[in-house]
Image (cartoon, rainbow, N blue to C red; front, side, top):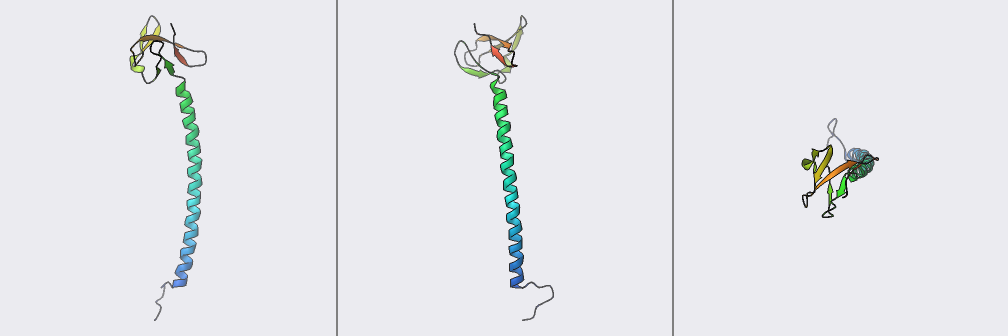
Amino acid sequence: MHKKQGELTLPLLSIMMRAMSGALEKRVDCLEAEILRLQSQIYGIQAEVKHFLKRYLSACPACKKEFDLLVNHYSIGLFDNLVYVKCPHCNKSMPVVDQEDGTVSVVLE
């Protein structure tokens, strides 16, 4: 059997496959490390968002159910320089005030 010029032999193919396999494994390891780093950043951002959104949770004094003032923004109205919001559960109208820490809350009667 005659070898043509540029034809790869079985040992040469084996060496090339091992080299490519090592390079691919190294690349996969790098990508896995990057994915773990990004996941950690995402978890941190999610925690910050949850903390931010928690500032706008309030409980209705009438029905005692909790609701998000930002989600229910469609029911906000201005009357006598006070902001009122309606409870999405019982439709009770309540005044909302700013707190010193930057949060808002329903005025308890």
